[in-house]
Length: 522
Ligand SMILES: Cc1cc2nc3c(=O)[nH]c(=O)nc-3n(C[C@H](O)[C@H](O)[C@H](O)COP(=O)(O)OP(=O)(O)OC[C@H]3O[C@@H](n4cnc5c(N)ncnc54)[C@H](O)[C@@H]3O)c2cc1C
Ligand SMILES: *[C@@H]1O[C@H](CO)[C@@H](O)[C@H](O)[C@H]1NC(C)=O
Ligand SMILES: *[C@@H]1O[C@H](CO)[C@@H](O)[C@H](O)[C@H]1NC(C)=O
Image (tube, rainbow, N blue to C red; front, side, top):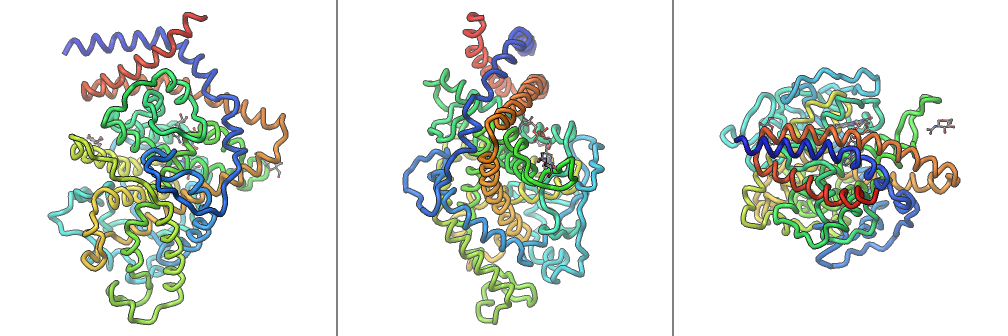
């Protein structure tokens, strides 16, 4: 197809012409004067657990306001924090040593912090060991699409371990925090997650997509470009693609927040919160913070939907009893504590878990789109095998499994399927554990923002200017990387579809429109 090649030639040429210009334009405006202050000086709302029944909210496709989540987060977090320490929720079985299926990964992290300690099987209550679970939880072979060590069913949004290999970990003993894992290996993983077949393009993609709902936190570059794009209609498919992007970007932002909350202080060798890290990675891009809220609401909605099932689940670590009879036998202390905390979480989830899944996957191509969405998400779960740091891989797996479980609950299960009496084996133990631990991660990130707000309050004018200045410098570095990402995208799209190409061209065209008036001014 020679015509495509001509188009590519134009595209690359256009890039060379605009490249330099684009960089100065972006670096001037990426961090606008007030946005770091807006994030960090925001007065949180407290103690009004309301979620008005409006059909639109600032969090696109959710019906809930930030303030609502904010107002309940302290309570949510304190309950989750105790819940994830109960025996049922702290043990996780996972195969951490599958080979990276997509490229040869040799950038293994040698830092001590990257390693994890596993737990001996004898510590795990017998009924939660792989041998016991695999005999009851694995779906029949003909429903599984099996790969070495893992499988998925048609309804799954991620690959699940088939429990033939793997270790047990106590999640409370391996906190997600700074490990020192970074550089090309980490960037490659993030990049391939964003660029999964051009489905979610990276931050560039959102720059061209106008968000239909007003946002209460000021946006970054997105906002600047959006002004030029008013009047553009959101394509039907765009909503789902944006949702995909937000889920990923929100997870990335939450991981970054945890890194910044427990960052290595080079002078003292101790872990502690690092405000510069948070300003650079999150506060200077308020939309990333928005997506942490977005993910929280999505997870809460899934937890609320599956509430009856979770309440009927067997959390008892000793006897083996069917989940539905155990109401009659005396409960252990652990089980009572688990159910008690869980019930508090469920109450909150019902109030604020107002994600509106009905607006997604509705149009003409709904099924194809959903299928694609699932495939991309499954691929993300496999990309986790390419993360070159054990602790990061562990938390990457927990969180992609948790989010995939939430998506499955929202998009694959109807009321009938959710009935715990009809369907006792709806989720595997690992999915339940991942779902709750992932919600805990996000809630903890929101809680951490409060901590950084306190630190910001204590920073004098000069130091806060310095913090912003450093964040700006980091952005300039990223813009340079962004340019090479575009080259990467060009190359990978070229090998794939024409529609992907036209999408890129569109992105390019719009960028050009915004940039050219500036060029004439100069
Ligand atoms: C699955 C996974 C888990 C990890 N877990 C840990 C961990 O537990 N501890 C640890 O210390 N390190 C962890 N890392 C590494 C960590 O995420 C960073 O890659 C590393 O700290 C280097 O950070 P960076 O500042 O170069 O930017 P990165 O976070 O690597 O980001 C790369 C680029 O992506 C863009 N970007 C950044 N954030 C967002 C966002 N929220 N949305 C959209 N685009 C964004 C920016 O352009 C940025 O330059 C993990 C990495 C992966 C892939
Ligand atoms: C590291 O610790 C020292 C001593 O407590 C402190 O003065 C410094 O601000 C810390 N550095 C960071 C980046 O937090
Ligand atoms: C998932 O990754 C595999 C391997 O790279 C690739 O063949 C497949 O097309 C990808 N699927 C999607 C939907 O991204």
